[in-house]
Length: 206
Image 1 (tube, rainbow, N blue to C red):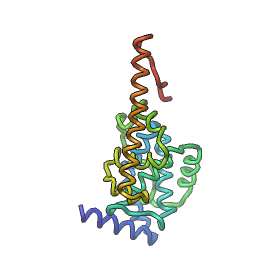
Image 2: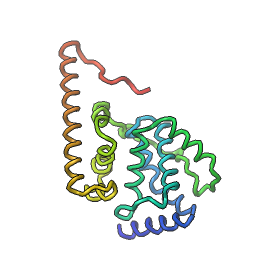
Image 3: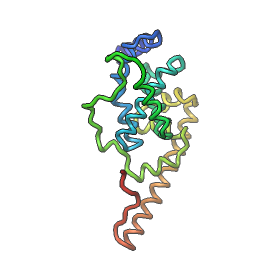
Image 4: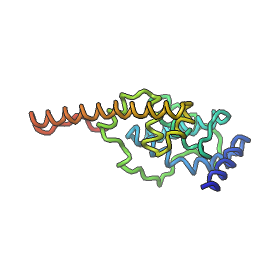
């Protein structure tokens, strides 16, 4: 583990010096995970690709401000992806067009691997998706890191500029808010099914 972290820190140090191949190696290391995370939050393949491209463009654009957590840039990328997914609009497509216009070599091309298969189970249940919408962006970042990605509260707090105790309290409150929404949604569906038979509370994704 230590060697892996050291290798990634070395790649990031080289990226800060303008080494495009080092940055490309970091892209290869994290792109699938970022794409899966974006897809889980958005549920649309093309939009997830746009968000992933925007996240890596932000990584390059803000490289002097990126914070490494536990020897990796992954948490920073995931938080940025969460931000972009929450605000997924035509702005992410503008990032995509800008990214595609940049001169690059094959080793630094930030394009999705055509062989990447997105697990359909990575999409969120509509009820859970609705529960996530009640969270503030700050709480969504925290939930994404700790609940979805398995980072410790301490690591998430470090990245989000929170004290561990405050992060723990916010995470607990976020979970309680989500639990309340899920319970209300389940109760509503049960009542509707008892009255009218099974109904769809959420429309299908297009």
